[in-house]
Image (cartoon, rainbow, N blue to C red; front, side, top):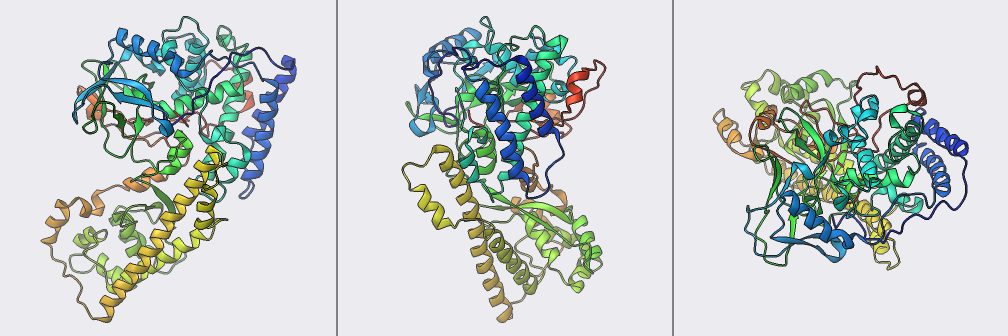
Length: 600
């Protein structure tokens, strides 16, 4: 995809600049694996560990200079070959072309008018690189015995991509040649560029992503050079950290979930041509047609000839876009920051509050989100804050009072305050909490804006500072909103305004208004999306019933199993012990391994 990558001419490797013995390299790899597999650092020591891991990686990269496999020329040189291959395979190619859109990079341009909801793009299964195609490739023997590959489909795709790139007769070469030579994900940031993310909510995921990628690289380096089932892989002579970082980023920015050929389960896939589309706000317009066995995409809106065709990647925050796609989306309608809240177990009213929350389907402690939209809090967070701020008498009213059970339905509804005092408390709390979070940043919003005006600022630094500023702006809006709401409800209290009367008949109103759905019938959708601990690729959970129909939705960057278990992305926290590399136990069973989702 265009927005997610920079175009860079990549020259073929001409050999390493220094001779490195296999033993010396293996010692460095072992040191890296040991460092990355050690216990998690104590709080506050994560940056120090990152610097140590990075130093080892840079030492390895320096010794591997010139060894990476690459193609002569630019991406653009191979676009015509990609289009010809797509047409030959039966993909649609008659209403768009690949074009350069300046800051957004490469994307799809309409060559004729396209109507909203018109099917304009389809890609047959034979073009897709999937976990299944990896099993049937030269990687298959290793996959059958390596539990890490079996548990992590996205790592399998990354190695599949590298093997096919090194194969001169690979059917996917027309696609692979058009992938970016490098990306703008934090895996490619310089140390000083990563520093801009310190104190942001993204920093922990960024540091973990780097450590996990380094650990995976070290593990598979040893596997490739020692495992008997890896002897035929075309990677033994050229498997550099840069190679793996490139493959990880290619998969991380492009992987999607599709049904297997028989529709019985889902698998991960790279979808050529379609993945050239850039992102905009909207709705998911891509699905998989099982009857015709192809990925299909309809137009998000009307497009005139020569306009860029966009798709919607999903409700990702800008932190997710930066970490997993390598770009900051200026007009992100779904941007948000996380806020961790919980009722203290030492509080006298804990049991009562926890019970009311449980009846509403909300945990007593969770990670919620403050949104860039108005209002900045979801119905779930509103319900939590109301219960959090309730007095003992108010709690009793929602536990044993008249219509107590039905009143639970109103907790997330702005039209039915618990009391004016309760509203004042919760908005005061939110205002104070957001203000405290703002104080954790090392720079002010004004300082960030001044830095962004510098013409010599690197692209990665610009992305990092925009993300940092975006978080602050969301918190600043939360402070302003909290203050305005507090003053509004104080006025209601001072003027003696009567509370809106609750009646059982109001349940019908609640059930018919989307914004007022009964809390007890809803999951924490927004919070679930923002709380993913490891490199979330903005997952969705396909409807199992959809697997029996002719179509199922596809969301760019998907990797969630039907049972809700998330697979580890390349760069996720799958524990790899050095002993596992050496044992190669062929009887090892599959283990569960998690993201969102670098640059495209």
